Length: 404
Ligand SMILES: [Zn+2]
Image (tube, rainbow, N blue to C red):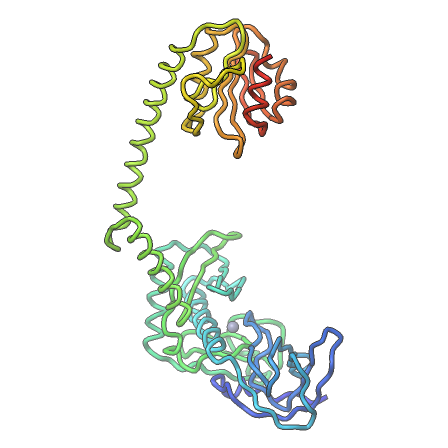
């Protein structure tokens, strides 16, 4: 078995290269595993995903390292012992390097300032999350972000090397494991030294920008969300797009959307209060108009339903304007003294189902709950003098039940 020459360690910006196909195995899952004499395709490692791209006409599905050999998993076969042209998805690789190098800058600063370790690292589709072993306030995070961006502006070289075992033993670096050979060091001059197998940008300036999106307590430390470079630009554009859409919806200038939303919320609160007052007045008027009866009384929303088969009284407007449970209960309370049977108010529609409140001064409703719910396909319960719940039965079934 021959080790594949790792071109991504020689030049992390190499995205087009030629190589010789040493082996091409057809796999049971329909993919082909190809070994080249040399490759710039980085296999998954160090929190960074495998590169994508093409080899000849074949599309790359995955890249893995096994015992020094880099396996390229492809959509189609390649003839062995031929030279092939390889092309990486350049921008995707660059974005990942921007994020990963940015992560090293920030983790290095946090380590040297607070002595916290990076204890978890995930590079997601839209941002990275990094977990640290100690707590940070938002002010501390912003100060770190400021310093990290200063390091970007200084455009410091990022050097990578494999120190010999005797040198490694005395070297101070992060992510120190028990490994003594083939340990690759990524060093940002005067800022950070860390063991890492992934490709990085060559100078800190290439990171572009480091932006922390959030910082939350996590397992005795913090989890921060970070974006760098082109991903940060995308993030900014997405935010700007939402702000523009919100400002258009509110007809407010972009800088004034917070006060416009506050205004809207105040207006909504006032409407809620006046609606509640109007509902209270309406329930009183409705209840006053109802004649006393020995039987049941039934209301749908704010319309009294006729129980003897005659047309609905008080108009047949069955739109669900009875928005609050309070008004529904209040109406029942006002109707109870007017009937010897049950006073029932249903809010909703046949399509959405109904919320119900049923009251009675004479019948023990708690004892009748099971029967009512069975008849109306409902669920709910309460006290002997009042039960509440919801049901899916249509108005016709409800009307028939209360006609009895
Ligand atoms: Zn790393």
